[in-house]
Image (cartoon, rainbow, N blue to C red; front, side, top):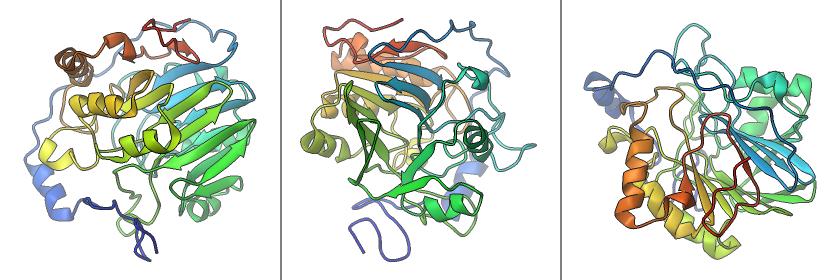
Length: 321
């Protein structure tokens, strides 16, 4: 028992815990989906540069490659064609990953924020296991699920618990979200973000989350992050998505709450999961930054396949290679 577990299921303290069937039906029956292009051809990214003191590469959706001193890590990796339990149905990608799987360096650690299909992608995890056998770090409840599917190197954490590897500390941090893989397992596995602390500073991956006081709490407990990866997409309609997904103005407020040296947008432009258009999150983010008077060089939209040097330059310049 804890402030986010009732003995059977996890929940968001002081907030909504899940989406009931009637609300899902209301959304599905009244959807007003913007049309996405069938396919987006992004420019071919350059080869990965030497990491030096550290580098971050945006792959797609919430998938980033961290190449850090002593540690190579992936966040919520997905290379599959669909974010779905089925190979023949479900949300299909609208652009290729920004980094081909066969160009990955050896991966030591996978950070899994939660179990939704666009974040916990079993085909990708199997490819990573067969190629590199990394440690998979996830919230409570994921070990049994992944263990039944042949994954043996799984470490479970509760919020604010820490795992150490390669000179880095990875702490599972609170998020406002929920978990579900099937019809009967709602909120049986814990969701969260991750804070990485090590030679390249304090790096924060928010996972999926609605806006809440957990951003300010993270700053109070761990200090302002040098780099924050914040979701900006999958927010429409707001009456339905607000408890679990930030919109761009809320992401800007999270950036301010964290006092982040540099924030990087994620969770956009790959899979059409909700009703907004493919470019709406990034356009609205730029507008929200201007309205709040935030220097746009402090909250950037990465190109797919783009690599940023770490730690980020704190003088307002974007550290691109």
